[in-house]
Image (cartoon, rainbow, N blue to C red):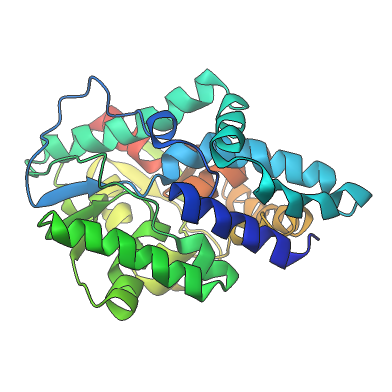
Length: 308
């Protein structure tokens, strides 16, 4: 295990300098929307929280952390915050493969298309699409989380934004539950699948739906993806420890202890694997963690896009 303070201080440093945990320049991290026909004006916006965009970087950086854990090199992690932010961020981005970046970008494009097909009116403002700061909250750095949340909420309020359509459970929880408490600003926050009304009969398969902790336990939204898949003739087979009692994928621990994260995700993988059905995830962290252990897993949006 790494010294938690070293990891927290590094993440806080990056968030303060670049508004994301990795220090990656915005123009490099967030490019999925290029050449995508999206409205640019409106008080209802798609808010990605930069989570899916970060998935390839998370995979690479946690691989590096795993190589350092419990070795003499682990103590040098704290020195990373003294590296020029843009240089460190650019290095992290260059470590990721083009294929992985395209796959993450396609998830966001699919979500935008699904919303459009459902008649949902929304705009996309890349200048307002910020990381929520949720990892700072998870790791206990309340001061930096509140500071960052107030910045993000202030930007949205100043732009006249009323409704935020989110794409992952971490961002949804932060904006819906935490931001009103720490910023004094309240937005209408809806997960994208809450707004979809598409149905069809071309699914004809069974899947094991993995409920992320925030959707399952804290926001209690698990029934909605289940109904959506059923609407496409896709059966969600019973999974041990689901919905309000869902099992964590280990993602929150991966920056502090990749070994602990691996142990947790393996327990969850065995529960999902026992169903004998392909696994469906609804969270970039869960998706990445399950892929690391060889799971046959796909994002919910990819299945819905094929069927819609």
